[in-house]
Length: 367
Ligand SMILES: [Zn+2]
Image (cartoon, rainbow, N blue to C red; front, side, top):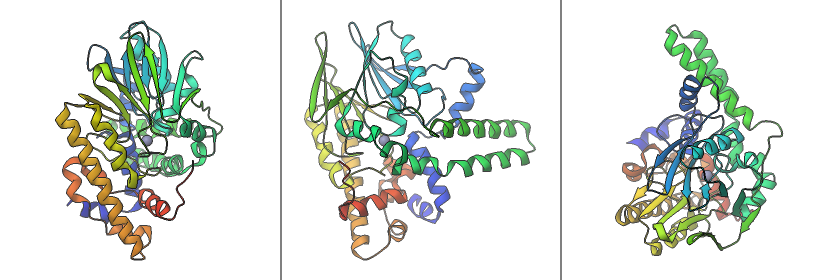
């Protein structure tokens, strides 16, 4: 049902949907910005910290400009390791402020799970003594044209001026003062986010790079940081903590959303995800949203994502073979059986379909 409805939606609706998917939550990406502005009065932003275990916290942006992900904070004996600097320098500063509310130990390591704007574009605001760890591909993407002009940033920023103009028009026509204020705040938040990704904005690439695997030891605690294979991008990293049976997995698998697929390898993702099974995890910490707890739930999350990407790739490949355009292929996909797990995100974006065409044509090899 959801799939059928989604297929009737125009491209404008799909781009809005994609923004929500990248943000990974049920709420629209500008809504928290409105709340934060109301609460802080513009003063120093601070991430919301949620305790998961004695040493692991989830950190969520309070509405700082930019499209933000979820960070995971590991508090060690003498230092802190955190995943993802999120969508802007302001978000990274807010993340560091949030961490200060749970520990006075210094952030020594930050791991970029991948190069996307909502995960790594806060790197530039990190103090110089923080080791920024990322895959070779992530470094290359952040230093190259991909980070400023690639499929992903274009898809999310190109529709924004029209959206902002639309919100302003709606605000001007709105008679209800409360609704008007909300629309104005949404327009302001969207403008602030667009500004983050405009002009010659600052980017910082990882200064410690990983090709396959490395270990960071904080006292006796090991962080095994490894490349599981290509999945959400060519350079995803998993941060595995054996002593906690926990792993931060970036955007390769989620509890309840498929995620953005504009740089993905859905043809390889299922096999890549198999690398997580032998870890026998008790805590899976995705790059957006809530953690998944327990071996059974984690096994299910992995299986659900594998089933989705296999189904998606098979159907798109068949459509391509039949001579359909990516647009026509998108319209005839039937992925609604995955909706009980992934909701509306079962309907791919056009770039996700185009990506599969490129993979089949051998045009997706950036590294
Ligand atoms: Zn991503």
